[in-house]
Length: 232
Image (cartoon, rainbow, N blue to C red; front, side, top):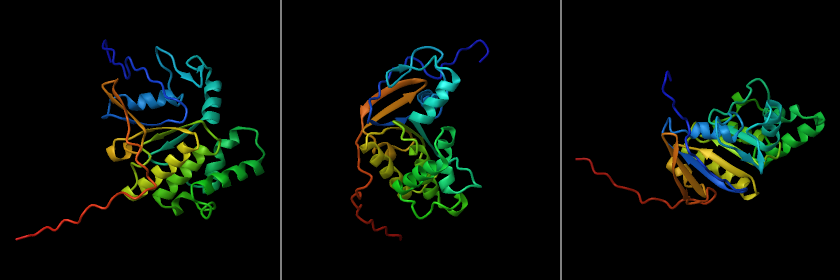
């Protein structure tokens, strides 16, 4: 910015182990989106190193990074990012088209992924025929169809009502219990409570790295007592 240097991230050093469920929090402009873009190999660090599964990937060529994203990382976004003119099944199978899998195998894997997220009866529906929660399930199925080791979820419940958001978190927790590492960005403290670890960013720095509550999304929360409000 003119003669001023603004570091989106500065002095951030984090190790995330395989199988962790990590929430990333912080106000707008804190650096969390840049951090997620680095994890997802969408940006390159201007200094420092990024090791993914023991490999220093900061110097990878664009084709190598694209291959890594396709084979190792699944992305889930707030706005779903589905292609509107094709079915849920075709949306899920799309990442596999960049490989050399036969069409029948791509379809088989996409069907399995949709079944995993509870949409076995919605495979031939287009996004406009699905609810917001169902569209996010399609997006999750698309993220896992390539059997990634890491899922990056950017505000995955931000466009959903609270009940549907909990259902999405239950799916992510189930995938995590199967060994997939999950890192999600959220502004919502109640969503961060489902993570086992919470990183908090502010002004480009990580100010807290703490243990999360690890609340189970597939278990009902205690009912709050009803409040009687008297109006005079």
